[in-house]
Amino acid sequence: MSKNRPALLSVLRREQVTPSVTRLVLGDVPGSRVGIDAFANRWTGCTDAYVKLVFLAVGHRYPEPLDLAEVRETMPPEAWPILRTYTVRRFDAHAREVWIDVVVHGDDGVAGPWAAQAQPGETIHVRAPGGAYRPGSDVDHHLYVGDEAALPAIAASVESLPAGARATVFCEVAGAEEEQPLVSDASVDVRWLHRRGAAPGTTSLLDDAVRAWEWPGGRVEVFVHGEAGLLTTVRPYLLREREVARADASVSAYWRRGDTEESFREWKSQQSEPILRPTS
Image (cartoon, rainbow, N blue to C red):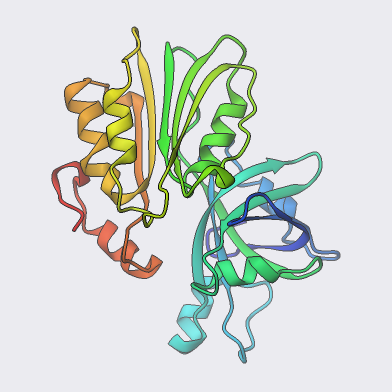
């Protein structure tokens, strides 16, 4: 499975995790040679693994197997697929399943409306998984900070922690109805922060909570992912004031308030050092 030749997967089932989060469980398409095995060949085991869901334009005939580079070279721009990035909630090689959690905002966007109505048997191309983080085994405390977009990676990371590990999670969601169970053998303190009607990306809940938190002793590894504002609030606090080593910090913007994924990608490509740059 190359970057430009995505796997073709089928919707096995759809689950409603919370009022706004829909889980798609994807598996093999009968007879396809580019299914779970192709996906597994690119799997690295990172707990922040992400994929690109590939949405083809209606009314065009695409090469089989799909090759995104070939599409861009040989087809008009209106036929180029739309790509949407999602963190993998779970990959179960034994069950041959890939779980993708999608936050659905009504009829807005491309992936959300599709996920809300996707039926078993429908197919979707999924571009090779990437990722860079897995919890360290030689740290004293794990700190996770994020919003709904980061929750799949946070949940996958917490699940992977061994007994005896210590972790704290700060997660911003709309309200109590959007909380999800985080299961782990480790000792994990989960703190849900509710926006209570505020729009995602408009609050300082995460920054305020992390700054008020009693800092643990020893070596702390941090995972801070979500709206781009975290790069100029939580990140400098952790790296500068708490002096977390950069090698112990996984920090990334998953989205940016007011941007589509295309404009967000453009903005992100221009950030040589996000900690030094404003996000508005």
